Length: 84
Image (cartoon, rainbow, N blue to C red; front, side, top):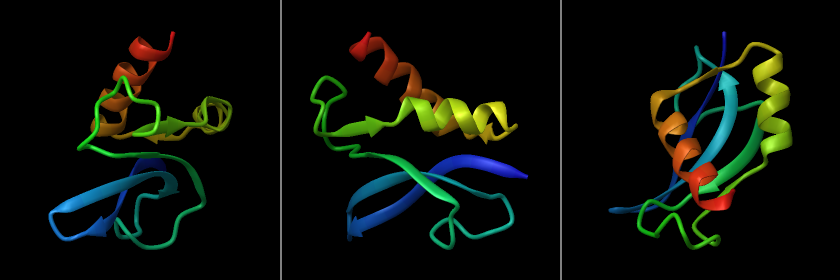
């Protein structure tokens, strides 16, 4: 099963997340199929440097049947609210 989820990187107590498309069976920070964006939780949603999602690639993977994790869905709602 394909999932769109967060992959953590950054330093200790200051995480930054990649939004990736990966197989559900792999660990959180292991192999992924495609990177579609990033998210900095210590920034605001209004600042465009703290979050980026390539919506074209996201929609492509949703059409292929990828599931979205709860946290990515929360980020998407905030992202669309501030960018539309």
